[in-house]
Image 1: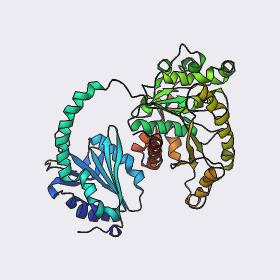
Image 2: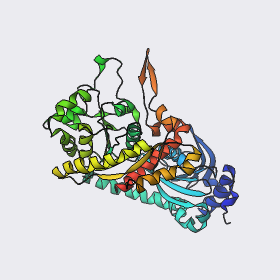
Image 3: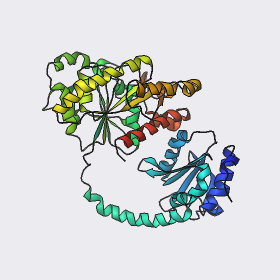
Image 4: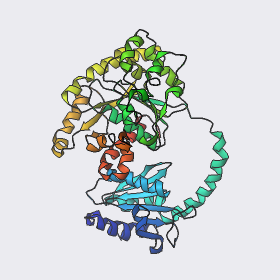
Length: 460
């Protein structure tokens, strides 16, 4: 029976007309191999289909491969539901998930602790693309893949010992703008979290004396100065001497901020007083780059949250970076700072990098950040604001956009009570969204940003 997406006017019709009447039969599933409105602990699935009959319904290591199918209202943006689907697949150890609103069909595959998009088409093209869909999630395809996977396990075990250490491909990204208040820290911490969830080993460096990243990742737990354990082990110590205080000596674990956790080099307010002494030695601005070189086999990606200035710490960060992301709210004051960013890069940073034998920094783009969600603004003004970046300032602009949302401050300002004290307990927006549906859109924007960043760095 042909499928007409125009007949799917609500979520119930997406379920009945697309999934039940069209997809499941086309993919070879019989009524005894799929289940609707499945409850597994706290998880509620629209559909769960198996490669073979499973009675009673159970998911364990011996179950045949299965696929989760989630139906949404035609007016809903599927980006807002990817996090939830990822939670289903990784929690239940299900390999494939189909997400659809009738107008669009997507297939995601579980990859380590994350998911990756492996297929996408519009609802009107589903009949011409059904063979491609079947190649991933048809009942027969799942059965064949289960046999192949059993063979692959042995191959994996035979080759496990051949992988000795990480390939030398570490990429370093500075998050920088002269203008403050444009969301640099929000971008830095949540991009690091999103990349970590994509299986990357991430190091996050805070080199701003305000220490916002250090606070936002949960490293500042103390209430009194005598309990401050960051004063004697922070980013400034990496810049003091060449022959000691290396990254493994300074690094901290983010612990509860994100799962998987992110490694952090913290900052401290004492960076302000230390700068005058460091400025006397020109080598200070090169030391971060040199010390990162020593851990190039330990990390996939390094992200540096920088100060909104032209000082030593900005020089050190940008000299160490391969790429630059410039968060901006696209307003006039932010735009007016772009020429000085370009001049700083050209006249100081790239010249310094050349002296170290490093290639010029690559401007990945201006990232629209703290953007209003007002529908009228997005419809009539946002495109004009973006065009200014490319037309007047001749700078690339990123495809991603980070909106101004209350969830982004709520996740950072979480606290827990310990006795009579309120202790900071911040979360990344991606972990926060798992239990806070209102944060899904914010989390989806960082998911998209992480994918764009990986694509532009040519990393899988």
